[in-house]
Length: 65
Image (cartoon, rainbow, N blue to C red):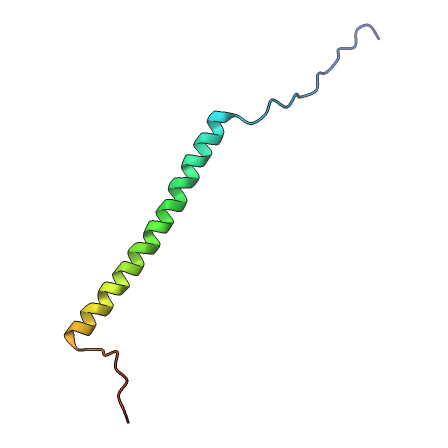
């Protein structure tokens, strides 16, 4: 058994700081972009609502029948 080489076990070195930073930045940009798109959509709908209200096409007062 003198010629048998020992196969070393993989040693856990811990998390890579650079990879973790890159993952965090990428995830932050992705979620931030989705959040921004959500707010743009709400802003657009609010603007459309007030434009229709100003034109008189809609009303917030319930009409009596």
